Length: 315
Ligand SMILES: Nc1ncnc2c1ncn2[C@@H]1O[C@H](COP(=O)(O)OP(=O)(O)OP(=O)(O)O)[C@@H](O)[C@H]1O
Ligand SMILES: [Mg+2]
Image (cartoon, rainbow, N blue to C red; front, top):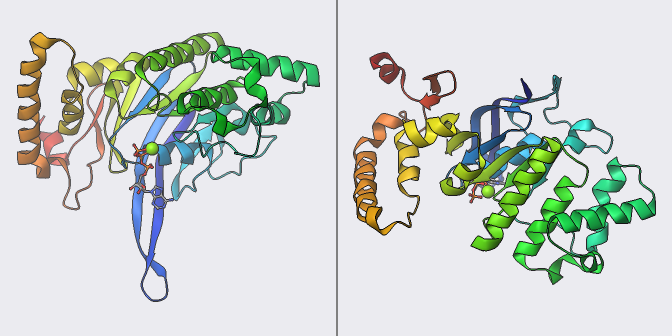
């Protein structure tokens, strides 16, 4: 059973212009997406830059205003509810931000950055609080000395780890992780990803894992949604997406995953060219007259693909 449901989420940003600075149009950053999250599972949200991934994540936790649609948490409608200290939703759903630099107040020491969620949601004595913070730092491979430093004294990777420590501080039920490892070098990436998997087993956490990297997503996720221009082109289990992908846009992303085996490199290059050509020749078939992605159609119990009504008929 899912504990969070996202129903037909839309986030539209107004574009202002003209002499009176009136709203002349909208950016359809998120344009009708639905998702369900179960406990202990990892959901991937994949798409190219600007497809609306971060906006989706921020809208779910209430940091972007939802234009229409609903977010339901354990049966309660939390759409556009202000994030307050005493709401269960605010405590239980945390986010690791794509840009860890701007997500931390530069004037606060690490001990204050970490203490904030702890003070809001846990009733600890000062000694217990400090012990908990040291524990959190240990989990992400950092030492107690970090507590007295300021965010600018850390590297990008270290800041990202601090972001993770803060996100897990109050044992949330779900973490929205927006490109949590994209800024890290490969060896640290693996370390952070493994750590995220460990705490998942320990706490029964769910993740919404946002990434443009289908290779990393394969390693992490049970269920994947592929996003393009604010909509989903395909949704399914890891198997549905990596073995039976249907939408040309998914195929295009899959063929772009780099390979390290020299023997298949040439084949992959030819495959990539073929997919690219098929995409160029048939692009109009995959998008409607306004260039928007078609609604999702059900292919199997777990697999959905965007297609026109005519194509669905033909199947
Ligand atoms: N505050 C804003 N005002 C206006 N438009 C915005 C705003 N924030 C985002 N957008 C637009 O919404 C669209 C989706 O942005 P979003 O940040 O969600 O993309 P993304 O998929 O996270 O991309 P990336 O992979 O580069 O992080 C983009 O076209 C972006 O320009
Ligand atoms: Mg983003």
